Length: 382
Image (tube, rainbow, N blue to C red; front, side, top):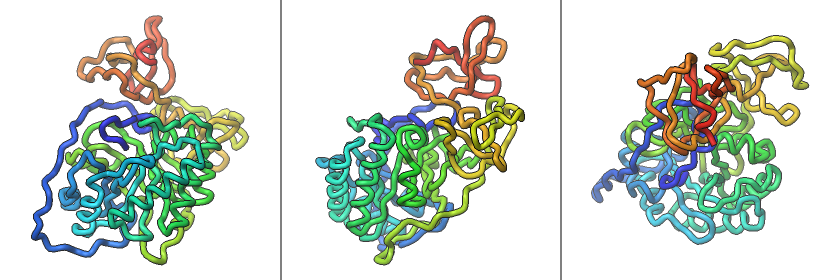
């Protein structure tokens, strides 16, 4: 989650108002404050933040806003350490928050490099005062040269090499990435088979301020422990997260939480969806656009395509619900189903990632649907 060059592949869950925000610092804590003991656990549905050098050394304002845990960037590759990490970890402890850490990965699909980076991450975390038994996340995404196209299996193997090394040194491993990368670029099932409930997934309903998560936009996946749902939580210009399971560390912590039953989530079907059986064969049933369905568990792969399960042996294509992310190549206007520009909706800026839901011809021009009765010309996308 590189705040200076944030990559939105798989993060923007649906089209909305695209907003840009600046990073601001909050004030440092007063040196005479009363220091509290850091909490060692948080309950499910607790709020938390993640911070790096681009935020203040103090997380007090986020604690005051209700955050119960703080995930601090400690390192990147094998040559960078966050100079504010020690201060941020100390501030989390002082404000009775559960301290955690993350490492920005550059190893791509290279398992040998992954082990070296894990060792560097642990050494960096120890130097900040992160308690043993805490969570250390591998932040695996595009940016700073990290290759995310090394293959699903090789990438998963490298990530596991990192996580195994974290665990071997007495910490609890997590994997952070965007929903799209987890679904398409990594054999994520291999990760959660070894480390159940170890995923920290980023997926936003829209850009801009979000105070509380809308679970109708939760990226239904198995094994999710933490959901990052905004990059501007409660107007503090900091990533906002929510725990889906209890989180705990301590000397006895040696594994992830036990496997939980599948999560049920209400989602809106954005494009009329055929219903398939477990073999990927159409049943003849359809789900109408804009109807809400209950998604049972996470993404299911059938013959190389991603589906959501909505009933006993009933599946619909994931793209009809979450859309297909596409990049706008230049400023794009939004139109209605008559081909008339909707002026009250802001134009979408160049390089924005937008979820699209099928193609439609309007007055002999091709459009992608981005929301109910909202369309953008196909030629405006890369």
